[in-house]
Image (cartoon, rainbow, N blue to C red):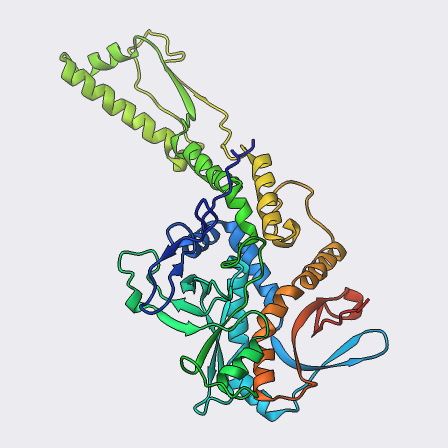
Amino acid sequence: MSPTRKQPAREMYETDGRPHLIAGPEGYRPVVRWGNDNRRPEHLNALALGSPLLSAAMEFRSSLLYGDGVIPARRAWDGTRWRWEPCFEYDEVNRWLEENEVNLYFMEAALDMTVLNNAFAELTLDGEGRRIASLRHREATFSRYEEADPSTGEIQHHFYSNAWGKDDYSPERVVVTPMLPRRNPAGMLRRWMGTDALGLKPVAGPRYVMSLGSPTPGRPYYARAWWESVVESGWLDFAQEIPAYKRALLNNGMHIKYIVQIRADFWDRLYAKHNASTDKDRNAIRAQWMGRLDEFLKDNRNSGKSLVVESMPAGDHYEDVVKVTPLRYDVPGGELLADLEEVSNILAYGMGVHPSLIGASPGKSKSINGTEARELFIIKQALLKPLRDRLLAPLYLVKAVNGWPDDLHFAVQNLELTTLDAGTGAVRGISQPTLD
């Protein structure tokens, strides 16, 4: 069974390729809508949370992206590749990282990058406007871009509100923050801070926003989350229809456990025994007897007991007065198992997570051994490096502006799985990339 293929949604652009716009705060260019109703992130969040497999895959992917957190590190060339070692000897750096809860920023940004493929970091200057005092995450769901300056192509402002696409949206409620350019943000920030040779003055206050989204071809504003393909292709709809079908099957199916055969003259004799001469009396006796029989058959506590029916006058034959035949009942639930396996794998592929790493293969004989799981885990960690580089970019900007040592770098510790003969199931360390 296959879903109906849908046409990809042009949720960000008019038919002429121009972005959908709405009014922004006074004195600024319009807001670029994210989705036709400007609520695309909320819809994607709801879809992700509503699917058990997508939720599990996103938790796995964001946790893997986070690794064991960010640490300051130093690297050295050993003649064949870079070697990374933790570096905690700079007190100013250690204190700054601690005061800003850098790993909280990194965790929040990793989740936004996983679900929406867009993330934003806010940098705040100190009171003198000479150093970056704090770094925080700005939630992508509530973030929007200002329309780019047509003369430079740069997006100059970041808009923040929790009312996008809602009836109570008002441009006056939008928080406006200058945006750093994607290229050479450190150089531009130095100019705005007045710390370069040009001697320019700071602009628009002490806060600046940096866009960290992973680039998507043909999308100059909001990057497209790669897993959206499972939505536009119809596979997610198909996955959601399976449990609805099974629930309807269980709720609406006719579950017959017994066939009860009653001899034709049984009722006449029963009515005569109770002197029931009117239809009302007969119906009452019949209903009472059938109710007692039904209660007896469906009560689990009567298992193993004998069924006793009304006796007949002497001289009559009693064979098969009431005959109860149990039926073999197969509980429904095996339907669409092959389809469920197929759609689970497709959703996992759309998330870029091997199905076996999150238990997405419900069929038989689908398990993998420890060596395969370990190698898949390591491969997935290695493929996350471009995203980690984007999330670490604000820290390198802080390093450049605050004048931290040149040999200082930032790295994400990996959880490295080992074989059991190494004495443990896992160790923690900084990945050691090999340069070709």
